[in-house]
Length: 474
Image 1: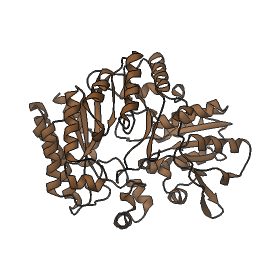
Image 2: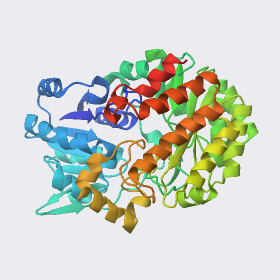
Image 3: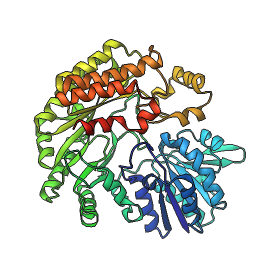
Image 4: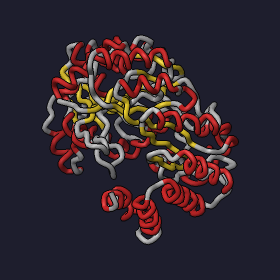
């Protein structure tokens, strides 16, 4: 049986940087279970529509098409799935990922979908394809899927999360244009071939703005499996750095210590970056991370306001955030802080508190995004948010199509007008840049802030003004 896996485009205005780990693991699982697997990685290849159709038509005798996608890729799937259905009229089309959070919306608005896979897809997709291979139509026995049953959408019980991540193989890197990702995901300080991998799934917290397909809690890969994958990537792709794409690399200090000691003892000798929580850093673990190769951490600070942090369910205080930034920098590790504006109750004062926190701690980099109630998070299910979605977009289908990254305003949860909120975000970003940077960054801030209100938004994004200015004033 032949399986075609399609990796959709994500962040079409940015180059492809993160290897699709999830679909890569599924590809390897299917190979190990005697399926023939072909991958069409549209995110890496970035073909135009005519070329994409031409390339897909070259693929023959496809029995099952699997397409994964974040909810931000809903619009992409809505356009591509009907084309896939036309090219492969007799294939089963299965979609998975965050885009399936509300399957009724998918089945009603995306023509050609046969099945949705919910949550982690490794076991579910294999079980479903095994039933296709055996011509077994007892789909109700498979947990974690939805499909049409007569005129209704039938959803089976959720599948339990796999506790032992070592049962999953590493991604089938050889089936993907892996070189594309290695070439585009580079460090600012000279490393040119950065691999993306994970050491864990999940996060110990439950922020109100966050939805995690991998569920609550935290699960770990063994150090042995991590080292095995790193050695494979070094030997086969000559990587010179790593992005450990965990949601919270320091969710468990004990386990993080084991990973770091594994890197040190095995002489991995590769610099790496990751994400961390502010309330779980201390000098000892940071020094060990530094010794093991950590050179940069991204921390979700989100706000300098105690009130906003409580609204977000961050379970961290501004004082803890300040201390975390200070300790990370003292350990010789650079830090990016992600900041968020636009929670209900946001005011000029709460924004000023965020600017003040950054001005005091001076992280190497920061990003200001706008609060976005993505489907599945607690914010999304607030009645006032549901009402605003329908008032603003008329349907969830149109809202899903509008969703992008957190730099795009989709729903305004504040008392500011849309224009005021966007200007507030831009002002916070450039004021912070002016306060914390050397002269060249102050010049960057003035130029970028001015360009934002002179150049039309679409052209501003297409020209990629921010990285352009950063290169000019490097």
